Amino acid sequence: MSHGTRYRRGFRLAFTSLAAATLLAGCGGGSHTPPPAPQPPPVSLKDKCPTLKGTTLASGAVLVEDAQVVAAAAPQPEYCVLSARFNNSTLRFEAKLPTTGWNGKLAWLGGGGFDGQFPKASDPQFSPSIFSERYATIGTNGGYDYGGPVDAGYFAAKFALDDAKLLDFTQQSEHKSLPPGKELVTRFFGTAPSRSYFEGCSMGGHDALMQAQRFPEDFDGIVARAPAGNIIGLFVQFNRIAKQVRVPANTLNAAKQTLLAKAVLAQCDGQDGLVDGIISKPSACQFDASALRCPAGADTGDSCLSDAQIATVNTITSSVATSDGKWTHPGYNFGLEDQAKGWGEYIWPAAALGGNSIQGMFSDGFVRSFVTRDAAYDTLAWDPNQWLPRLSEVGALFSAADPDLSKLNARGAKLILWNGTNDTSVSARDTARYYDSVRSTLGAARTDETTELFLAPGVGHCYGGAGPDRVDLLQAMATWVEKGVPASAQGLQLRKTDASGATTMARPMCKYPAHAHYKGSGDVNAAASYECVN
Image 1: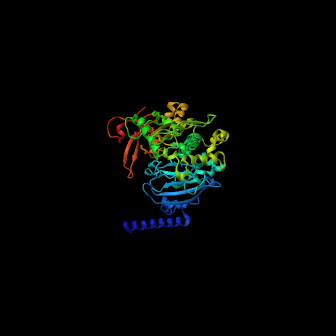
Image 2 (image 1 turned 60 degrees about the vertical axis):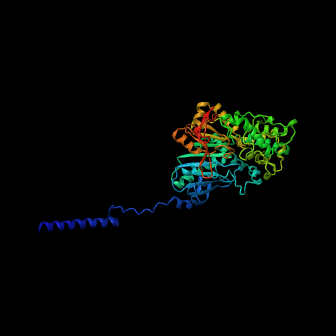
Image 3 (image 1 turned 90 degrees about the vertical axis):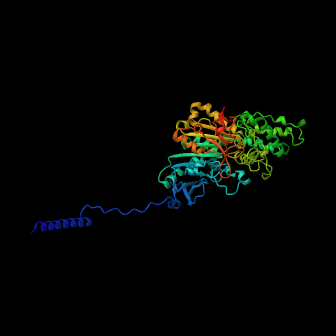
C-alpha cells in the first residue's frame, strides 16, 4: 500500500468516527447544543401601541382604556395615544408617546380653568419643543370629565360638590397619575424617562406650584405660567370686581374704555424709552383715574368718567383682604383697558355671558360649588368674611401659595415663573409678590439656585396681547436642569409671531425685577435694541 493510499484510508476512518460522534450527540448521546431558534423581528412602537389596550398599571389600580396610533400633523409627530382611568374614580390621564425619535424625557401638561378635559400641547401656552424635541407627554382630566363645551354648566363646577373629585381637582390629579404614567411610558419604550418636567398655565400654573410646594419629589423642573397659586385670594377678588361691573352705571362702555386706555398710555407708555403701546414696567405706572372725572362726578358723556366708574377702575387695580387677613389679592395692572386680550378678557361684562364677566362666571362656580355648596346662592350678596371657616377648609386643599421651597431646593429641582403683565385672570402683581416672598423665605442665594421669575410686558392671560408672548420655557428649563445654565443666562427672547410663524417683534426676556428698556436707537422690533434694567 502506497503512502498516499494509507493517508486517504486514515482520513476516511477519522471522518467516519467524527460523523458517528456527531450522530450520537444529535441523538442525545453527547453534549452538543443545537443552534438557537431564529428570533422574530422586533415589534415597532407603532405596532406595539394597540397591544397596550387593556393593560393594567399600578398593581391593577389603573386600566388603559384605549390605545391607538394618531398620524403626524405638523408640528405634532406620529403618536401612540393612550388613555387610562383609575378604578372606582373619574380621574383619567392621557399619554401621547412619539413612535419614533423619543428624546427619553417626559413633559407633564397642566390643564386650565375647571379642567374636565385633557390638555393639548398644541395650545399656545405650551412650549414648541414638546413637539420639536419629541417629548412623551401626559395630562389628566383634573379628576372628572366635562363632556360639553365651555358653557354655563362648565362654570358651575358641580364636580366640586363631590369630595373625592374636589380632592383630585385641587391637588391630587397629577401626583396620583405620575407613577402609573411613568409605568406606562416605561412599558411602551422599554426604559423609564431620564427626566420629568411639568409645564402649565393658569390652573395648570396653580398645579405647577402645588407640585413645587407639596410634592417636590415629583419633577426635575417645573414651568409655571400665570400660576394661580393664590387661588382663594383670586376668587375673592374675582367676586369683588364682578359685583362692581355688573351694575350698569359702574361699568365703562367701549368709548370710556378707550378714553382710559389712552390716558394711561399718555402717562406711562414712554417710561421704558419708547412709545409703542406697551408699558414695560407697570409697577412704575401710578395712574390716578380721578384725573378723568366728569364735572360733579356725574356721567355726562364719553369724554370723562363718573364717580361710579372711577370706583370701578379703583376696584380693579386695588388690593383686597378678608377680615382675618388670611386671603388677600393685590389687584391688576393698568394697561390694555380697551383690548380683548387685556381688561376685556376677564373683567368687562359680556352680553354672551348674560351681563356677567369671565371673572364672575368662575367666581360664581367657586362660591356655589366649593364654598356654600348651594346652586341657588346669590353670589352678588356673598361676603367672604361670613365664610372664613369654609374658606380655610377649601384653602387647605386648594391653596398653592407657600413660599417655602426648601425641599425643592434641597433636591436640586428648578422652578420657572412667568406671567403676562396685563393678565386679568392671574395678576402679574400676585406672581411677583409670591416670588418676593420666596426670596424672603429662602434668601437670595438659595432662591437663585431654585427659581426665577419673568414678566412679559403687554401680554394677557397665558398668551396674546400687544406685547411679544412666545418663548420656549420647557427648553429653557431642560437647559437649566441638565446643563446648569439658569434661564436668565440663556439670552432668551420674548417674540410675537404672525400666522406663518415669522417673528414680528422681539424683546429680551428680563429676569424680575428688571424690565426691557429701549436703548434709544435701532430697530424697535429687534431685541438687540433693548437692555434689561432695574
